[in-house]
Image 1 (cartoon, rainbow, N blue to C red):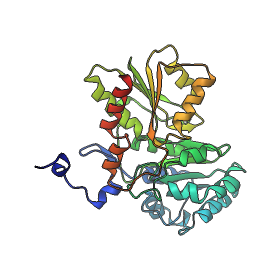
Image 2: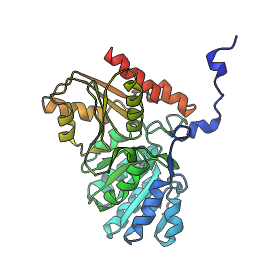
Image 3: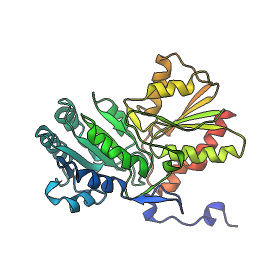
Image 4: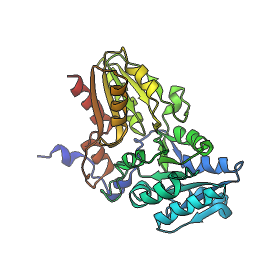
Length: 334
């Protein structure tokens, strides 16, 4: 007798780095690289640096357009950050790209001492945030937000989709001081254009309202929250979604307004460990403002070293797929 597992198509190794876009979903190719190329045409002070990962952070488009303003630093992330700091001290605006695990865990002290302590104008844009690769803990940056939240003066951005990224690039370039942006690369889903949305640095946006549940989310988990909300509507469950693309500084006013006087479950959904991320930031804000929701739950990644494997399988296993998030919300509602 065939089991359910045997009937499913066997996932190949390529599924470990699969796009987060569902089959047939609208996507845009390389939104970060294209937005930076467009912005740099009128901002000659913008330069691009990478640690041997131009192709895999979409910075190769910038390198092709402005070869004299592109710096390949090799596999030396500490040098990448130190050089970016030096360029910023000379009045340039460096965009430094690598994978999130290398840009945070490997280069943390250089970001802290060289860039942040002097409030330098460096934009750190890191691919493979959270669980966007199946290559295991060495490449899964599940704690990057927690680390960067601890850096004084660091602005943190976790965009949802291609539109978010395109609109965030010029705004983080205009912002004075260091920025850490989680980067979705390659074929990136496009979803927020259907919700009359515009990115504003430091602002959260209510994308849809609902009487039963409020999902506060960042990154691609906002896409998952919107999908789960559509599914739960079939069961007469009203789900509101508040997208928080800026993690630090957090838009506490918008969060308090969305929670206060509304008797509904609050769920914080994030592609990050439940330790030190958006969920704990929201909980802290609610406590300090003495706002108590009907219930509060974290739909994030566990405080653990995650498995390696096919990305769709891992998203289901750790509760951040469309179906799993919807099931978790229904379970919390009882």
